[in-house]
Length: 67
Image 1 (cartoon, rainbow, N blue to C red):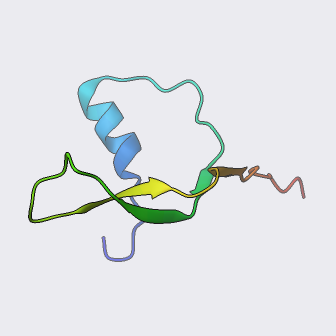
Image 2: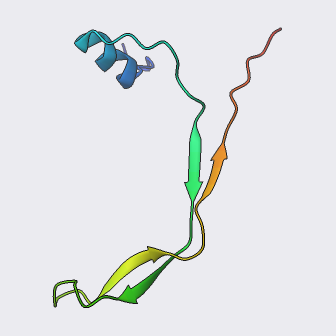
Image 3: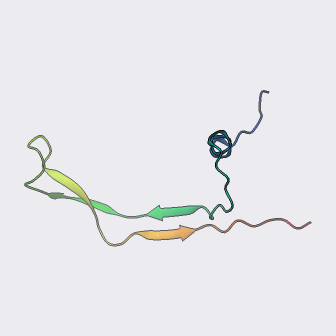
């Protein structure tokens, strides 16, 4: 069985008896972050990470070849 492709999500769904009717297109998120000082964070860490700007969302549409 070397080199066989296995879809772990589909296999797990089958094992627990879940029936999937629709799978959404893959999504990709990107964002820029920066660190700011926060007095509520424990003393060993003085900064927290926050979003610098906005989150960009890109959805990749899956296309089927109709040959």
